[in-house]
Image (tube, rainbow, N blue to C red; front, top):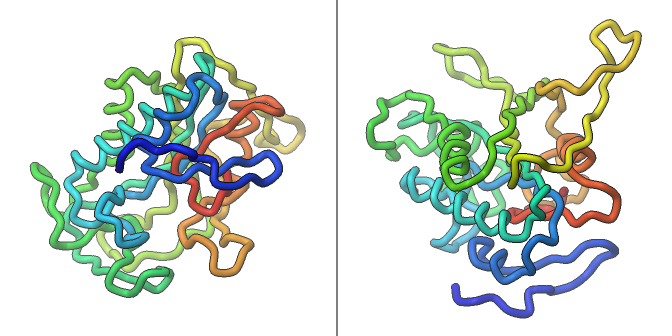
Amino acid sequence: MGAVTNLNLFRLPGVALFCGDARKALLNLPSERVQCCVTSPPYYGARVYGDDPLEIGLPGQPLDDYITALVETMRGVRHVLKDDGVAFVNIADCYNGSTKGPSGKNSAVGNNQAQRQGFINKTTRVPGLKPKDLIGVPWRLAMALQADGWYWRQTIVWERPNSKPESVQDRFTNSNEFVLMFSKSRRYQFHALKEPSADGKGMRRMRSVWSINTAPHEAKDAHFATFPTALVEPMVLAGSNPRDIIIDPFAGSGTT
């Protein structure tokens, strides 16, 4: 796509929506205006959201291209982020060369296009990895962003107690995803949050394992791969103050 202009399509109270390729559109926005980024990019090889060949994470897309696209997007986030800003990226891992086939049960675009449960198409291979190898997508992304100038501050484990069972018999059922926390600078704005202590008698500083159920979007026929509001809330509270600007370059249904 070319340069994106007149990005602001419409406004809701306190919300502005911009349309364009995030890798380029972000660079057209004013610099250093955003305090916090909370986002969840398309998972690698998990879904087809439409018919755009530039879509990020398509099944069969080379892993290097996927990581590069996310690094370019986050480079735009760094452009709009204040020097003391933070970014949270929710992402899951997947396996190389799984025999798991496509499943379009929850897809808005058909049975042959959508895949889920952390598997990529069986015809897709990541060079250098064996079939059934865990790819390590979150770590590859984190190290790529670190090399691009971000401070990789923490990896938060999102435990999903209501995860669906898996049919695989040679490993434990996956029931977690990850939230990678980055900062633009060595020192940044962050509010330490509290949670109930283990004995239930008091409060303690919030830990890095969050037990939060997945939840469908409240709107019927909404985006079919939403992350829950309860997951977004602590990121927003920790990384911003009231009236700060928060950005999500992969807006989905607008949960952030």
